[in-house]
Length: 501
Ligand code: NAP
Image (cartoon, rainbow, N blue to C red; front, side, top):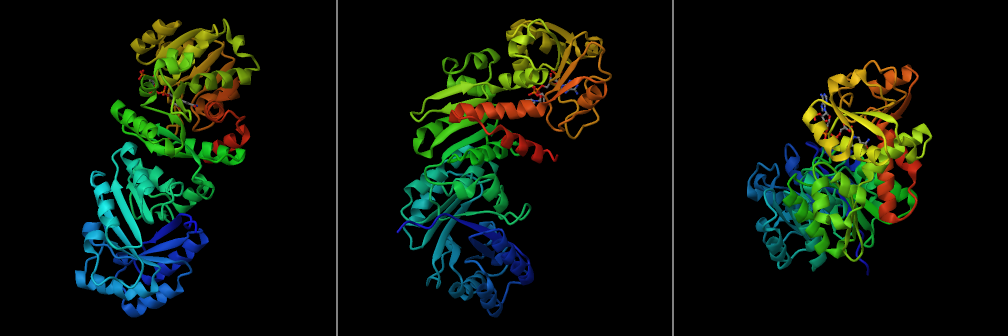
C-alpha cells in the first residue's frame, strides 16, 4: 500500500483549554491534516479527566507532546508528572511524541514519534537519526538548526535513506525549504503554524502560505524545484510570482526561498550540494544580492550569456538534467524592454537618445551596459562620483555628481537609486523634472508610483514603473527555465496584489 501523503500538522500552543478548543476548530477550517497538542504550553497543566474529552472532541488526529525546557518546551513540572500526563493522554491520541533520550519505559499506549532536536548545529543529526531508527517507534523525527541552506540539505538525505516513516526538518530561515519540500520526499509530516506569530519553531510557515503560496497540494515526488538565493530573501516577491506562474501554466514545479549567508563559500557550498544530489530535481535558481557575482564565478563565464559576462553578474541559473549549468542576466533585458515597450520603440530605437541615469550601483550597471549596447548617449549621475567614473570607463558615457542632475538636457531619466522607495516615499532624486525630459523610468517598484513618477505624470511626461522591469525579469527567468511562454498577466497580478493595489 502506498504511504499516506505527508501530513500538515498544526501546533496548538494555546495557554488554556478554551483556546486550544478554538485552535482545533481553526486548524480544521484551515485544512490541517492533524494537530500537535503541546501540553507543556497549557497553564495550569490539564488533569487526566480534562484530557480525555479534549482529545475525543478534536475533529482531527492529535499528536500529543509535552516538551521539557531543555527540549525547547515550556514544561515546568517534574519528570514523573510529565510522563503521567503523557500516559493519561496516550489512549486518546493518534501519536505521542517523546524526545529519544527521555522515552519512557514501559512504553506509552500510543504510536510513538521518537524525536531529537538540536537548536545549535546540524552536526549530530545523522547519527541521531541512526540511533532513533534502531529504537522502537512508529515515526522518527529529527529537527536541527541549519546555519545555511547547504546544511539543510541533510534533511532530504535523511528522508531518502529513512527505513521507516520520518520527519526531518532544518530549523531557522535557512531551512524553510525542508518544510515545503517534505511532501516531495515523502516525509511523515511537516509542521505549519495556524497564523503568523503562532510558530512552534523558528521560520515555520503558516498553513495558508504552505498551501497557497508554496503549492503544497500540487507537490509530488516528480516536482521540479526552483528557488531564490539571496541574503535577505524573506521579503522577496519571487516565490509568489513564480509559484503563481507554475500554477497558471499547469507545470509540476515549485519555487522556494533559500536564505544564503553572504560569503562566496556559502554560495558555492549550496550549489555543490544541489548538484551532488540530482535526485532533488533542482532545475533553476534566481540569484539576488549579494550573490550575483558569485553566481557568475561559479557557473563560469564560458557558460553564461554574453550580457551576463559583460555586466559581471548572473541573476538566473538554469540546471540541466545532466547537471550542467547556464547563467543569464535577465535584469538587462527586463529594464530595456520596460522602457522601449512604454515608448513604443524597438530596442534599436534607443540609438543616439540622451539618457540621464541616476545611481551607479548594481541596477545602474546592468542598465548602462544595455543602453550603451543599443547606442544611447548616457550621463551617469551619482552621489559618489568615483563610482560613476568607474562605470563609464567600463561601458562608456559621461559621469557627473548627482547634484548636477537638475541641469540635465536628457530626453529620458532613469532612477536607479533607492530614493523614494518604501517607506521613504516622500523622497525623490529629481524634483522638478527638467524641461528636456520626455520619459521618466523609476526602477523602484514599491511603491508602484513613486513621488518621481507622480511629479513626472503631473507634468505630462511618459512614466514607466519598476513593476514592469520586475515582472519582465521574472517572465524571462520562467521562459529560460521552462522553454514555454510565461503567463505574464498572472505574474503581474501577483505583484500588483502584493503591492496592495
Ligand atoms: P545599490 O547597488 O545599492 O546602488 C544604490 C545606488 O543608489 C548607488 O549609486 C548609491 O550611491 C545611490 N544612493 C543610495 N542612497 C542614496 C541617497 N540617499 N542619495 C543619493 N544616492 C543614493 O542598489 P541597486 O541594486 O543598484 O538598486 C537600486 C534600486 O534599483 C533599488 O532601489 C531598487 O528599487 C531598484 N531595482 C529595481 C529592480 C526591478 O526589478 N524593478 C531590480 C533591481 C533594482 P553611492 O554610489 O553614492 O552609494
